[in-house]
Image (tube, helix red, strand yellow):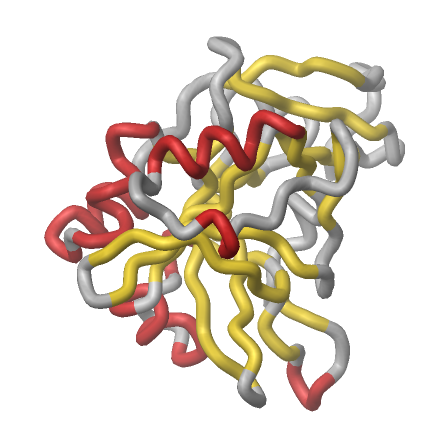
Length: 202
């Protein structure tokens, strides 16, 4: 079953510039700048990811979510710990990895309070993802891992956040895959949202 978390992330006008800096020599026509200074991305919408093709990193627009079971809805998350064993994800994890850049992401606690998270150093989030092609359309999912201390009071899971220096390894080096799938993401900061601390997590 997909993880019902990280169901929305957001980008800003700096996101495209940072992607262009990382993917040097990129054809600017592939870039899809955010339509506003800040824009939310929802499952089943198109998002901009970084992937590798024939050893070259490129930016590509893809649909967020694999087709759901019996074509109902979309599967937009996958557990990083088991992605190499799940039939739906294992080949993509081995051969079709991507990076989903974002300024931050939202999460909701059990009381449905909306909380947003970003990096403490102000840099972009580089979320680990995988992609596949369905019906001629490229689609991606975001991998999740066990929440670290900065997120665990709101949700037990969080995106698999990679460091900028790990982007190339994630895209190009299968030998680093097992380590990166099980890494503990850097601590994040809560930038908006009230959390009801007394709510019991059942």
